[in-house]
Amino acid sequence: MSLSDEERRIVVGLELEKAEVAYNEAIWLMEKSSWSGAAGRLYYSLFHAVSALLIHDHHPVNSHKGSHILFGNYYIRTNLLPKEFGALYSQMESIREEGEYNCTYKVTQDELQQKIEPAKHMIDTIAAMVNE
Image (cartoon, rainbow, N blue to C red):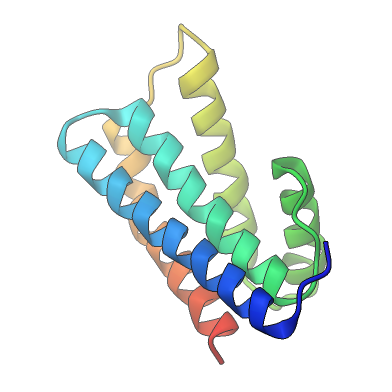
């Protein structure tokens, strides 16, 4: 899909908005002790932030797997963003998948609480990059 500069700016803004909404939903779900639900929302907050960055830089976002590959290739391996962001993105995808699809896996409070601040930092860093 080819976007004009104005359309790209709008879509990037919408993706960042979705990232913030999903992050806030994750916090709300954690307050309700809904760890699996919070993990899903936290992952999606990162997915939408990464999508905003990829779209901003004219990279296609066609799938979750594709976004991980492009994010790793263009931002992590090139040291434009810290390796910790790539690891966090991958960890959150794994936690979300296990929490949603594996009936024997329980997402824990400790597991998620240590991801909240790094996730917010990643979202804010990406937002600053696309708003320069």
